[in-house]
Image (tube, rainbow, N blue to C red; front, side, top):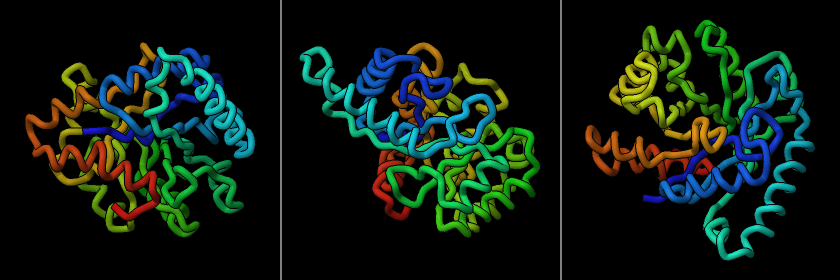
Length: 249
């Protein structure tokens, strides 16, 4: 199985992810060794403290990263980079700034398509989450809710996602939330979402080589103890690849 990871912070020194191109390369190496072949860089946007709300800046920084990686990939020890399919997206924090940018068309969807990764405050009421997701849909995008398992309202009653799914929303869960080492509340919610059919994509939300590394293989092995290889493949390979290719899932 070759994984596609649609939620990573691999652009160096743009948010709380990789701090240098060397850390970016190490994250790519870790992901590659764990079976990932496609990665989407999703820097934080519209989140206080980062001031990275300019889509031209985000695109330029991604282009700089790709150019640097291309140079490194010419060296034998970094040849694995050539096998990695990298594309750009963003992790959009649901805020007034995001709503304004959405209205102006100034957002960065995944690989230039119609899927948009949206992050919510864990404590935001579900009614407000639904209102924002409706705005995303009305703007012509398919919202993918980032790390859905972190939302308190979802933790309290996962079935609340039924209405959002019926609207046309998709749900991403972090890979490490399924592992035994995870926060018990996050693990319980993630397993419930998987059981109830509210998982469309599993991604790493990888930030640093040592802090939430971009590893999907461990979750794949764990989930295959409960689910068929075909179901796990849909979460980790098929659905995320279709998102990157801007195809229906």
